[in-house]
Image (cartoon, rainbow, N blue to C red; front, top):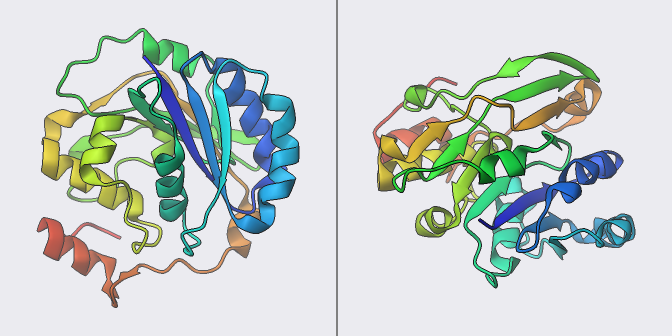
Length: 238
């Protein structure tokens, strides 16, 4: 089983070595780590990556040339640049300020996964300002009411990512929810499964979060909830 880890990087340089320390030792031959950053950060990130290229898996950095500063565009760019030789079986999404749980990839490789399952999620330990404050557990049964998972919690079959077409970069902030809903539409609820072991540490810095620009919840000039109602016949909670 070959796994690619896809991670967007946007102004997360202070956290990058912590992220890389958690990921690179878990890579095996045939695995890849593909990071996508803004052009102005490319050179600084290349310097950091130099000491991580001796691990088994390939480590690739690409610049986001899509002209859209969003996680969706960065993930799509990374997906388009990963190598399919040898073939990639599963995509592990992760954010560059998060931490991959120890032995997460090896534990995942040992699973026997039914053919119908396209997306597997696991709990994430929430770390706020350096303190573990609890565990988020995915619940796919609430998918018509609210977003059940964030990308860092999930593994998705590469063939399923291809079929649904990746992420929609025109949906700001809720592009992951739209992605899960397209998986549900194309594969049904049987496509989703959970594991009981934590897959990542979801790192939150309250000062950084407060400094971010307000989230835009619109799509094509309408509230994204109107888009979900039109596209999927659901009106989830905010």
